[in-house]
Image (cartoon, rainbow, N blue to C red; front, side, top):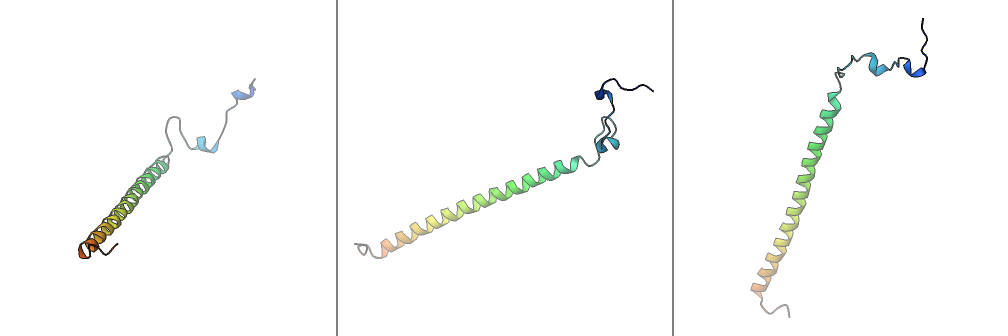
Length: 81
């Protein structure tokens, strides 16, 4: 039996490499990728609609305030003095 001359020549055995053949990925390697992509899509869509909803609510409130002010001015033209 020949002993390795350097310690880097020894074969390193890890649990990951025990079930994996050379060049062939594990069966479950795609799961985190799919879940991360799904998470980004869901949260991105939710953020888009949250920002859009808040923008529309601000626009709606501003529009409603200007309409109520205009209708008050039409009813009593000199009442604000």
